Image 1 (cartoon, rainbow, N blue to C red):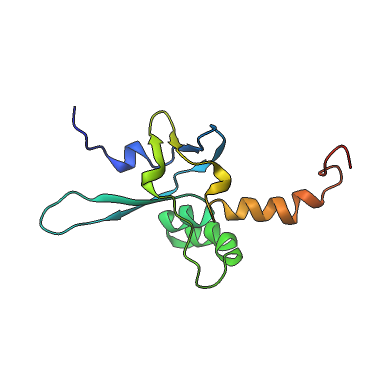
Image 2 (cartoon, one colour):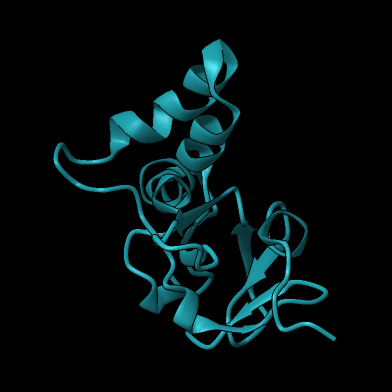
Length: 129
């Protein structure tokens, strides 16, 4: 069996879980580097979230999907990326060697919603408080 696989089939739209199997998103886009002289492309980063999905889809729909996440990201910051070296397993989901909280910037929109909306809802605090 070949050690080379199709990134589209093996990665795109697969559930991403951290080392504790906490699901936190899907692979919405894959960043590739295309080497010269006929070498095979290499996966440089995995992207997850609305901005990555919007960029992948393109057009008006893509801009509409990615706009909220793009607005919440600080100017000059690159969209969050997951280093492919963190990937431990690819089937049936993409399992990482790191914990979710160790992945800076990943699922930023979800973190923003939790901080600015969910935590402010009645009953969202700890039961002991």
